Image 1 (cartoon, rainbow, N blue to C red):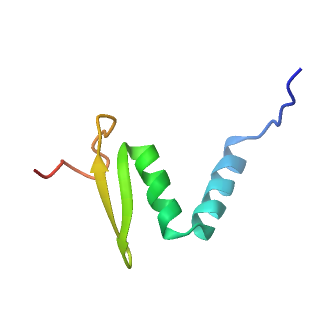
Image 2: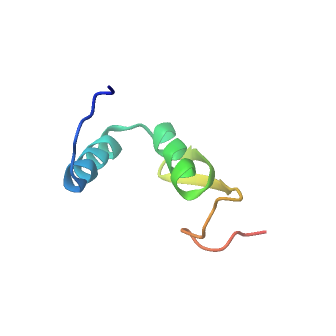
Image 3: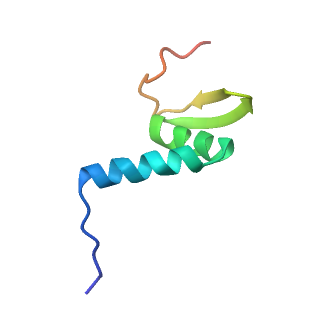
Length: 65
């Protein structure tokens, strides 16, 4: 039988917040692409570039051509 850890939503949110506060810019970019649909890269101080893919759902506005 597989082992299980039971956690609640508040714990998950708190742990994600802690992780976000500690991760580096490249890791933040990686997870941003995974969550919102596309590939994201750290482009400099406080700037990121998201290259949307077919999973992008418009979280940051329309795709510029």
